[in-house]
Length: 165
Image (cartoon, rainbow, N blue to C red; front, side, top):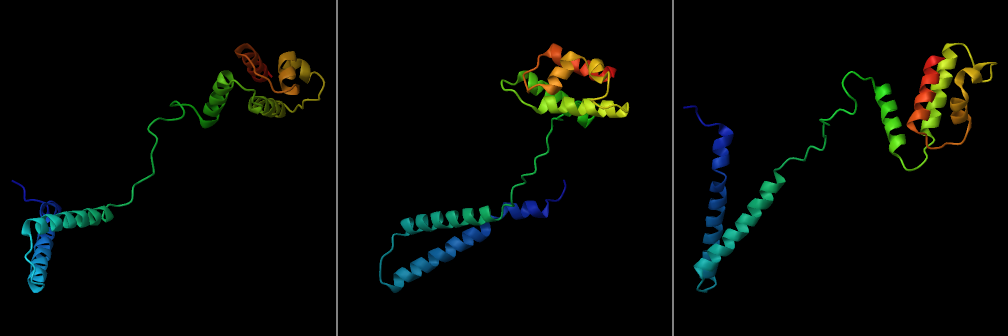
């Protein structure tokens, strides 16, 4: 049989100082009642001092509790395993756009940046001859027009055109 831990023994004897404190208070109360020549009701005094010591012990115990740890580690990854952060952001943005009830210009700006980056890789700019023809009318309309809600087919065509450059 293993010896009890020091902390466990201390936890089992938490009541000893509190009981001693209660007895000291009881003796002081009875001594004060003798000094005042009053006949005390011992049962009520014991009950009152017991409640008082329990409340004080509760307050002491509450002050000994450490501060809560508010750092929560998410257990669910925001992106599936094997995907990079940029791809995960793009997928979330597309899903949000498709399920949104309002028009958000974020998708149009992202398509503009992707188009610009792809054209820059090829050494082209948007105003160069033949570029708008390579982009296609649908992508040009999305890039140049006002922000609007795009359907799956339109999104697929725009992304395909950017990839095919």
